[in-house]
Length: 261
Image (tube, rainbow, N blue to C red; front, side, top):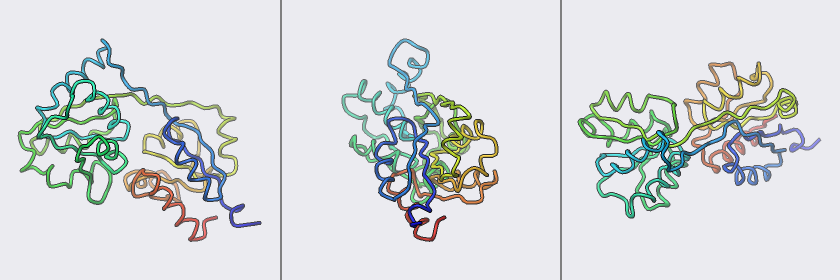
């Protein structure tokens, strides 16, 4: 049996339309690669719905904000689509932030100088930036681009520092429900499961009892998600620096080189 045959399969759980490039790259590692989305991203249309009206109000007022923060790639891409509709050119004087390089990339491609954390790529890391400390944000307005719901850490801390924080909730995340038979087929040989967030872990655990004993390892981007996984009993948690494909691949290559089963 070759080393490639001994390697566990890889199960990618990103939404449809956001996994193709990663799936192609993972094939080169010599592992069997599978794809099972855990959530569907539904972006709000620019219509007369209450959700769209709320987003439109925030987008039209973008020039009133000290900073705009995108908390995910979906938030960045959706927010930029709205900006394209209502701002022929981006308003001057606004600071732009992404919680990590994957989030910041579409903003940078749109010509924005999107700032990211210097080390830890999450809300906690972003809150370490000097531009978001108390002396900088006190009495300033900050807009957070995000999906409906989600963590409140970023807004709560910024409000404690004296900022006035608003949300533009741009999309919803809808869980993808699979049958027990489908999960048995996907997990029967204990693959490595690649997750994009702690919410993704919640979704799969709700469908698969005792998941920790049905996988070889979890791979998650960032220490926050890794800590949650460890607390829930996952003995082998691989931590990618960010959600970028290159960081995911680097983490897997290192694990395989170190003698992964």
